[in-house]
Image (tube, rainbow, N blue to C red; front, side, top):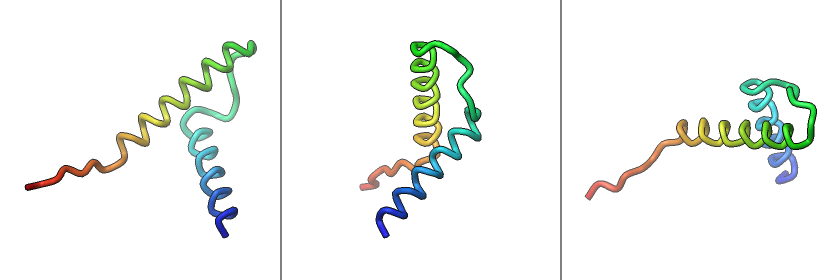
Length: 59
């Protein structure tokens, strides 16, 4: 069952990436593609970080 869960999470991440960023790379060189993927990954990580709740301990 764990394999199916991991696969579902990976497919959901790819679907989110395609929805937000697009379904194809715009650059043609390897360096450009690497940069484009790094920017996209950082953007998605930041978006997911903003959506997460942050807990503060009340004393």
